[in-house]
Image (cartoon, rainbow over all chains, first blue to last red; front, side, top):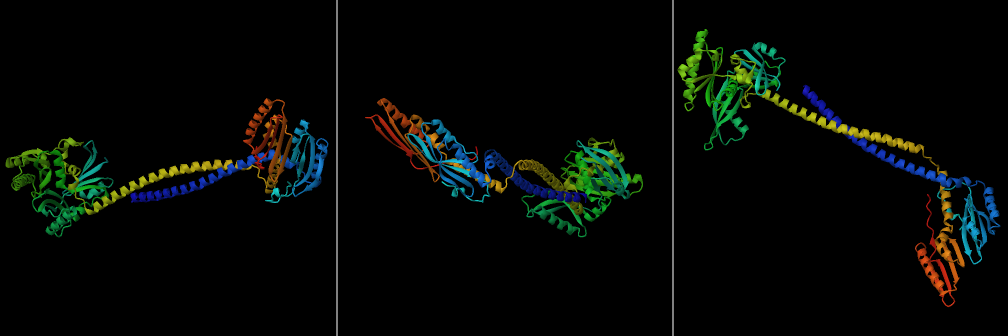
Amino acid sequence: MIRITILIINIVLTFFLYFLNQWFSSQEIKISNINQKYIKNTRKLREIKKIDTWLAKKVKSKLLHTPNSIEVTDLRLIEFFDRFATNYNFKVKKFIYHDKNAHYLSINYTIPRNNYVKLVDFMKLHYQGGYKVIDNFILNTTTLQGELILVQPFLTKVKKKEHIDEIVPQ
Amino acid sequence: MANFCSISILNNFALVLSLEEKKNKLIVLDVQEIELEQLAQYLNNKKNFYIALEQKFEYSENIEVPTAIANSSNIRNYLLYKIKKANPKIDILFNFKTIQKQTNEENTLINVEAIDETTFLKSLSFIKDLSQIRSTTTNKFALLALANKCIQVKSYICVHTYAKTILIIAIENKELIFSRSTEVQSQTPETIQMDIAENITQTLSYINNQFREINFKTVALSGSIALDDVIPQHITMFSNVNISILYPNTFIENLTNEEPQEYILSLGSALVPKENRFVPKVIKGIQQFNLLTNSLLLLSLLLLIVMGYFSFNKFKDYEDLLQKNQILKHRYITAYRHTKMLSHIELDKYAYTIDMTNKYLDKTPTDILIAVKPLMLLDKPSTFQYKYEQGKISFTMDFDKQFSRLVNLYKFEKKFNRTMETISKNILIEKSVSVDYKNLLYKASIKTKKNIQHHKRERRQ
């Protein structure tokens, strides 16, 4: 009787251990999947962090310099024009025009060719808080002349999937 | 080997030896002579019984079995049929062995030793737990087993006496060929002695007559007769045989001198080979059941150990995985806490700014100026036109150079061509050159072969 009892207990324990094994196996699969997700998501988060750092370092400064009123936006363009008008013989080609995201000022410029320093300075000229786009130039024997566009973005609600190629003047 | 009990029962008395086997020797731990009524109580806490019983009904015959019956179970059935035919009212329990195989004849001679199973089982009523029985046999086979262990001659007769009971067996080649158990009826010691001596000599004569081809020269005495002086002399006088005494002392410890003679059958019961054991069906069933349960128990234990091992390994793996999970979770939470999650609006602003930057940085002529710088260092272009249109860049450069010496013109031309080759690797340009060697004038015009699609700048630096 004792042997049969032990036998039954052994069989029950064996079955219990078998099902425990099965349970461990299924749990292992589940946890492995979760671990894989953790690894993947952690990797993603690290990438996001790198992008955040890059954004903060490279892009955030531009956002901070972007004005949020139309008047400030226009004044910045005008101030830039006035500051370099004499140096580079700026003439307004097309006064301030805009789309939903930026204001633009088209300027004609003329620089004597023999003043190499001025030529280099012009090329290096940086428009703080916006963009200076040299649309075209012609370098002849005496002068460098052409057209540049000042682009001054301003903060506004950006509609999703709105493509800026369509609104930016060429 | 565990301790065991060898029991022989004669005339309502049980002779019990508690034994232990060590290095092919039987060590006697205890000896008891108990009345049959008290035996059950005495054996209450004991295990592993080897029993030899006295049976009134003992059937010993040589039966011819047709050689056509070859299968062991069929032979058994045939023999059972034959025995039952001779003893219809007896519940038969029997052993059999082939005496000689007659290959040229139609029959095989088989020796059958049978007892009454019901009576035999009743005789074992003193055993409460039948599963503790290891061997059961009759007294003559117990005597045979011990005699075979002690005597090495080919054929001999063994005589065992206990009180008034005489047990005589004849043995050839270690096989029992004759047995007789009788009880003398005399009352006084003198007449008992004489009756025993007479009975023995008569039986010896009968055996010699019955088995004329066998020369029984040795008679081994055991039991009370072994301690008697008169009877052996009487036997020698009338039978002309060598008398010897069964002497098991060589493989027994703790019994000295004549002590073993009293327990010859008990000792023999522990030595009976399997083929001479009578195991009733009930006991066989219990033994088989025990064997089965033991095997299953062993198997289940083995399975349990194997499953336990696998489960333990699985548990360890599971534990390691859980630990890894905790570490990964912690890393994830840490990474999550240290990562600023930007809103969609913020992301859109960033994306817009980046797109704007890319778009307007693309428009810079700096890349073209850097690319054509080697040419400009060679000679200042007379005109240089640059235009950015529909996302594509086009430019034209004109060179117009006057030389005073032909060698300079020649060297300039070579240099110009080499520089052009280098530039052409990066930008698709086409040139038109006209050299006026008369007036030492070098004219060249370079322009984009087709409008250059500006490659996107890498966002991340």
